[in-house]
Length: 144
Image 1: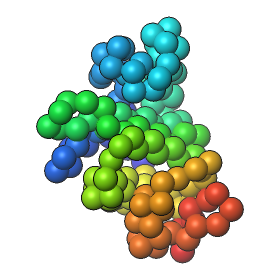
Image 2: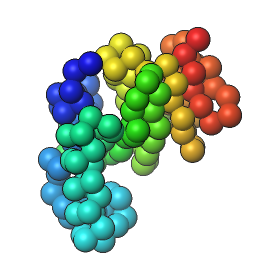
Image 3: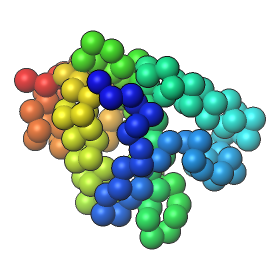
Image 4: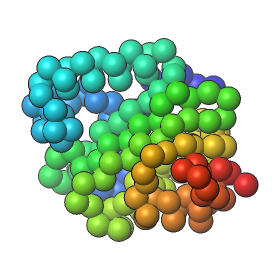
């Protein structure tokens, strides 16, 4: 498998997917609703995890406004499974679909994960996964 650090940036029609370390602390802190110190620790953790090839994290920037519009992470990647987090703030369904489509391409075709566990997942994101061969059950997406 290609090193996780190679999967950036992703560019879609309306968004730029970039690692958290690419963004200014103040901007990341405001999006995450964390203090600067907490954000520094978080960004340090994400960078180390990406370099260890265990997890991947992106802030998704709106290309027009340059604001962080979403956050995606897949943690504890191993043996065709990972823990998925998707945070989409104030995005419409079309924008969520655009994010879901790129995420599915990454998960399914690039790192080939068959199972994704999650705590909560936006309904538009879930729907796009199910339309692409994943079944949902017990807080898990499983590729059929």
